[in-house]
Length: 145
Image (cartoon, rainbow, N blue to C red; front, top):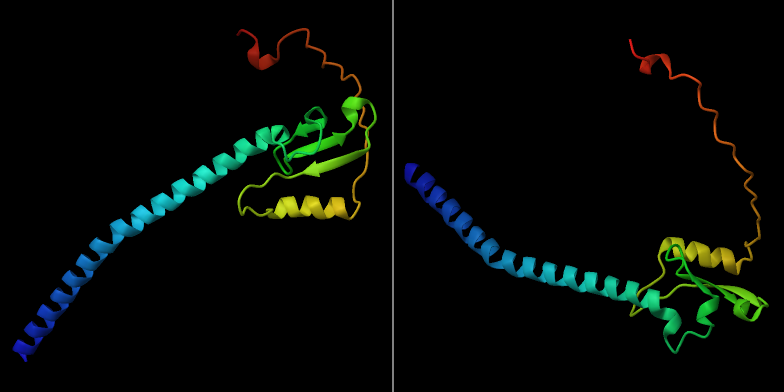
């Protein structure tokens, strides 16, 4: 009975050692792959953000760069097509994507609203807001005692 417990304990110890050696050999490889993937994704995002900023200057941009206003979020540009010439023919929302990037949920919502014609003009006039009158003497809590 005692000898079988010793054999069992030795077997468990050997199994743990083998498992630890396996984990020690796989973890660095997994960590390196994860880091490489994270760096690659970060570079792709940064590259995409740079392209967004300069999209109006690329040959494939079909509008006058002076008509484009960069927003960044939730869409990259709003183009007032013809504004520089004095007559706006149309207003175009533009989302710039690179590679295999897809629209996110918010971008799809904006696209769908525009396609559905749920766009309108609002003018908001802000009146002159008078500054609050200053008290003639400081509040009680600030007066010298």
